[in-house]
Length: 55
Image (cartoon, rainbow, N blue to C red; front, side):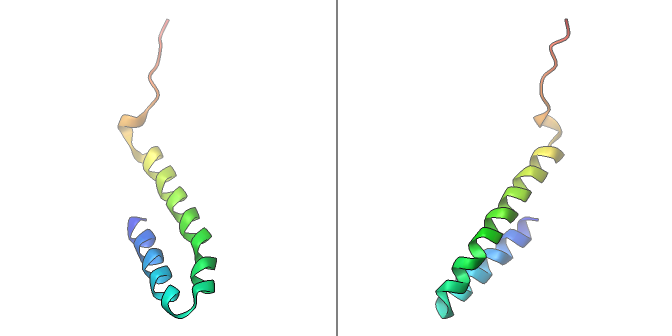
């Protein structure tokens, strides 16, 4: 997923030189991909479990 985020960022940087509007239109896609990456990392991280308070 991180590679996908990097590829999208590189595409935006490349597109910005030729067509700034196209690069701007790709920005929400990058934001969504970064959000999905963060969610995946949070779910996959076994140390990120909520602590239980057993009574």
